[in-house]
Image (cartoon, rainbow, N blue to C red; front, side, top):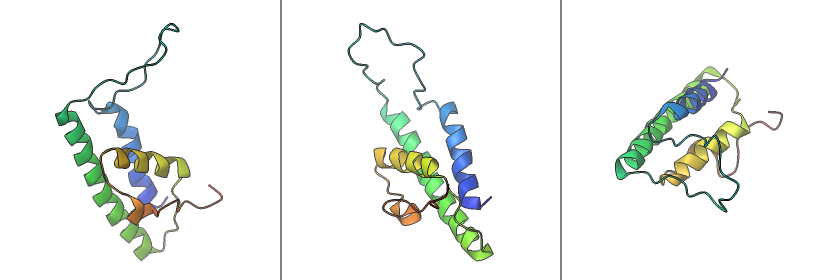
Length: 108
């Protein structure tokens, strides 16, 4: 497995354990026409942003390692999309790592 994919897997798997991650509501009453997402505090937002900044540093290093060792790009499209969406929410672009659209192999 390429290091870049491994870093993404670790981050994705840790996300639900973070206090700023709201998780999934187990039940929503049918009478409620819409669900208001839980508000997060500035501290929670800043914690998520710091985590994404750290993730970006790790991904840059992993990408460099993969290039130096001849590892192919092996990231899954779903993982790239999740990382890019969360990064966008906190104002961080991952386009320099994953490109503007997708860099995942077509067969994955």
